Length: 189
Image (cartoon, rainbow, N blue to C red; front, side, top):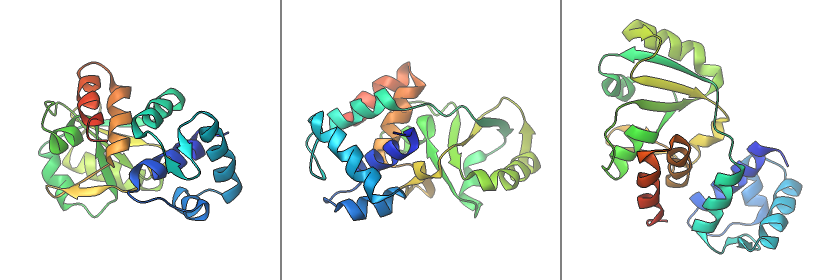
């Protein structure tokens, strides 16, 4: 199975509070119902789901970590007052890693701001960032990947943050002290 579709289905299963039908999962995961059925059967054989219900959210996150591919496409910028800029922009985004974790549980120092954007908005983001800062290694990293990573994002402290399951996956990807923060967040799953 293709990676993005698997991740979309797991993201929906983990981010939704109530059980969903296979058709509802397909709609929310933006993939076909046959893909959902096929992947749910695989997860059921692994003992992670029963039908469309997650048996163990922590075990499903561990499985997700094993199949997850870290995004490789990003751009870095040095921007003065990036949080103010993000609060004012009308462009779509979702914070992740250090800054998102700091908003959610206040464990990590927000040494860098990582945010997901839609690929089609890259030129607009580049223009905004270079108008307000410099292009190159800095304090803001814009990540271009499957836009479904923004599924169930929420607004906290005036900023958009990825869903808790997505944040956990991204923190584990980051490694080091972020893994400790991810383990702490896992207690809330």
